[in-house]
Image (cartoon, rainbow, N blue to C red; front, side):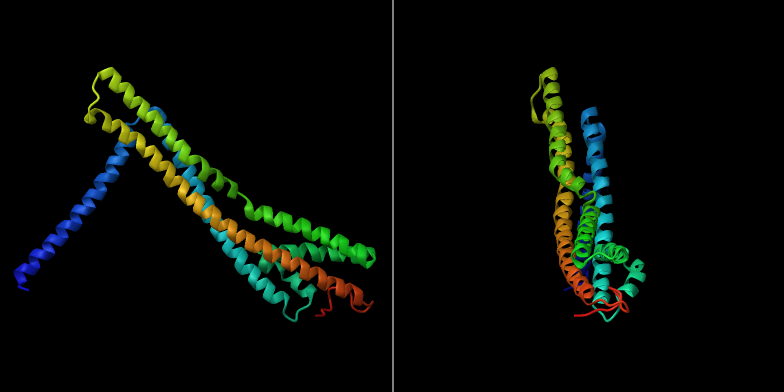
Length: 258
């Protein structure tokens, strides 16, 4: 290939890339102009969708970090729990696993175990108290993990219809103007309809991420809830064996068996 031909091709490629960049910028500029030139109701709808999108992304990001920390802290806690370490020492280090729902369940269960031990209850009554405390703790942790996810579900279900409302309202305005002007050609109809359709696109752009991350986070929370249920069953069995074998020299929770 001759140098001149190569330079021509490079120049054409650069021109094509520049044209695409300019086209993209023009499209974005046109969308902004359409929103700004739309009617008050469409602007109001776009404002609602913008606010919903900002709140949704704030929840998405905060939940991502919360669930990531919950998973990593729970994994480290379980590894430590099943290591040859006394429960009292593990309880003393519980602040190292503050993001773990499993660690918080253990903390509540161990504190309840100390109270029933001081009350000198029989094994059956003691285990009933501990199990109730564990269930309350698990319910509280599940509520904490699911907090604000309902907004994502509402956003995913409602914002497409909010955007559609803005579109319908904008199209109604366009047809009203057509009636006033007495002109129904494409040049008269297209600007108003294109402005109105931006609301539908904004509604979908708000709803799609909300639905995707709502389903994703629901799946991750269900996995954590399964881990919490498994831990509660193992913890109760462990405590019951310790209570059955406890001696005055070895209070429950200081010796571990199994």
